Length: 358
Image (tube, rainbow, N blue to C red):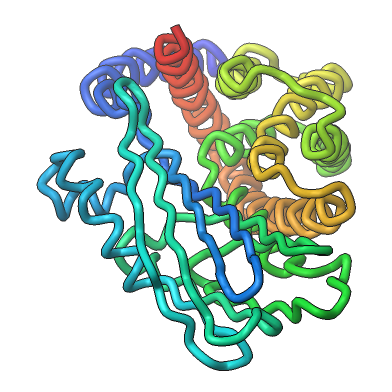
């Protein structure tokens, strides 16, 4: 009788959830909004520096300032770059010569800016300071590859890591920029709602502490392997397939929580399989940057440490709360309801990503 009441309550909330998702999240899911990512190529020749920045899409803050007009938003970008990016050589500011804008092509969202700086002396100690986040939005991340005759490096600019300095004449340490990539990985897991939803689905399973530890460990090992393989360009899967499978993983695991009381060892296998796909999603951000082989390893290490740190923080915050809920008189109803809603959200996300890809 008690089990029947639990299933009935879950079914009712499931039906209400369908209506809420259709009314509230439908337009947002179809639009599939996301934070813009910047990819910068910095080329140093003598006393000149060329900074080429490609934005994956027009930042939401710029679009809002332009009242939603993409043309007006693009026209704001040269001023944002010239005022927000500071270039100095040996402590002496370099002068900006020009900023060129390549508007987004028809049907494309990306836009490219090219700016030139001239320094008084040949570049020896370069300082780059990026304050464009004040105008473009704090959720933007700019992955920069810096090259000069005889050397190269990389750095992940973000609102909390805005400045880097390079001694051009000296060998570049293999760990250059590792701290910035650690913060990038930390921000990626904490801001990646689909990865967090999958992690929540894993924690909602009615299992013992040791069983949960095996499940989380399986997820960690699996996504660490494919993160490395993707970033090192050993394994490459279509982005649309990866994103759709991640959404499907949320729907499947959360649904299994409702209809299978004790997933047991089967859950470890499922988590391993889906964890491999999530790792490909993590690796895409480093793969796009195209780092040189040696420096890619350092960036991968920092990024993966950031991802794992973020995952530990999430588990440490959620698990005690969910365990407390499970011990309450109607705890099973609450957890089943959460899993049911999570499964619906995963199905909706899957539909939106498939529709966008097609």
